[in-house]
Length: 155
Image 1: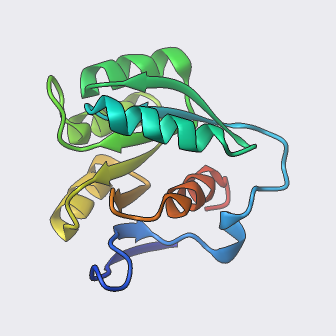
Image 2: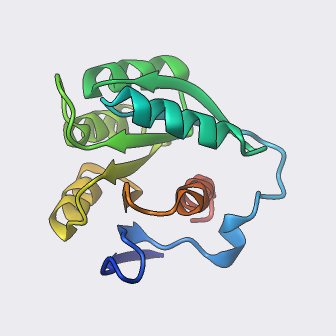
């Protein structure tokens, strides 16, 4: 179910084209751990995401990258299920990194994360192959729900 939508900041500050269902916010019944690679050039953001996600029983953070080039390298090495991808980074931006990851490893799902609530960025990330796009101002539980939804093979 692909949707392109922007909500204003009074509702919930997020811009995404993948809408999780109520069922996707709960831990899935299967016993497989979702392997996540966290990519952001800000150490505080990476460490915060890692700590938060590791509190989920079905999610394992398998690696971290501070730029798009390292993200591409680690995606090949670690074979994550999901990559949370910042857009604006040094060396290689998240858009190009997403494009390269999806070309080389089509099974890897990328979730774009940005501070910009922009339909333009959402559309660019979708075109690059991202499965979802969220604004960093979104609720943390929404990211978990989107990770689970993107990891669903029936989604």
